[in-house]
Image: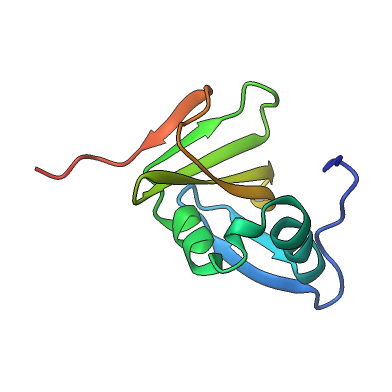
Length: 117
């Protein structure tokens, strides 16, 4: 599925909007959230709160090696990481997809949570 042509904004169609760790206003439409949770990654259908938490308080943020406007937000939940992939545009952005994974993908490290002592 190609994400480039997907519109995430419609009149009043935002499922949620959130300000991420980097200060960007990230959103996803109701219709595209359904695409992610029904077609792409049904395992996150009940994880909306975790997706929002991952954007606000991630363990780390990486820039994708595939595109300089694509960012990967990771947060560990149990033995897996929730990865939320976002495309940034100026001060805003939109969710491309989100999924659970056992390992973090390569990318340019932009931000990492400080370890508590």
